[in-house]
Image (cartoon, rainbow, N blue to C red; front, side, top):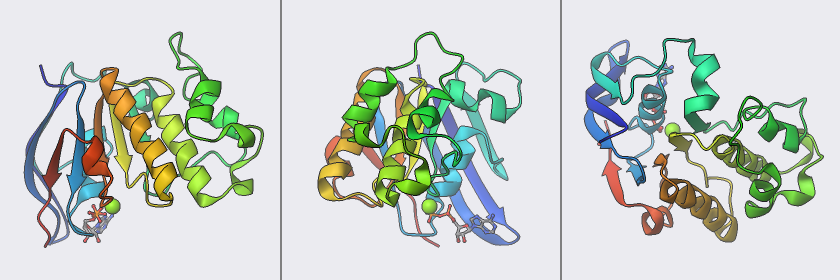
Length: 205
Ligand SMILES: Nc1ncnc2c1ncn2[C@@H]1O[C@H](COP(=O)(O)OP(=O)(O)O)[C@@H](O)[C@H]1O
Ligand SMILES: [Mg+2]
């Protein structure tokens, strides 16, 4: 049974198409790469898949249906998101950035282990402003995985990584899929194809 089905989902801003209609069926346990040129709608598709944007056309069907609560409340419980803009909580330490989304969970992944896996252990006590952009991006990856959500959406999660750290990021996302999550990764990174089960390519404008 699929976790999320998108049927002919499309979106425009005014009359400019942001995402040409696309259909996508996502199963638990798979890592799907989302490719396509800049401006083809990869970020828009991730926002629609997460429920933060409404498509103009088409239907989004999550299984089971998401609870009828404000998206902000349900976000971290069901969906792990790595934004293209990273967006950490600036007042919180790296550790507390990970503890926050998992605060109501019994079954949270061990924060210390996740920090080690992503080569972040030595920054645990620092604020985001005091680590590099690449390190911040890996914190965003850890934050998306810490609740072991059913759906993980990652927007260019290796864009600020060197090759070795890109491997750590992709291996972590692969491990989440192997543990049963549905993982959708927008990226141009050629390394991604080695970790993905399949690739969906969006057409450019
Ligand atoms: N809020 C917005 N208002 C107007 N245009 C937007 C908005 N968000 C995205 N777009 C446009 O939609 C298109 C697709 O954007 P995006 O989903 O970010 O593509 P990608 O992630 O593949 O680079 C782009 O042409 C972009 O400029
Ligand atoms: Mg994008």
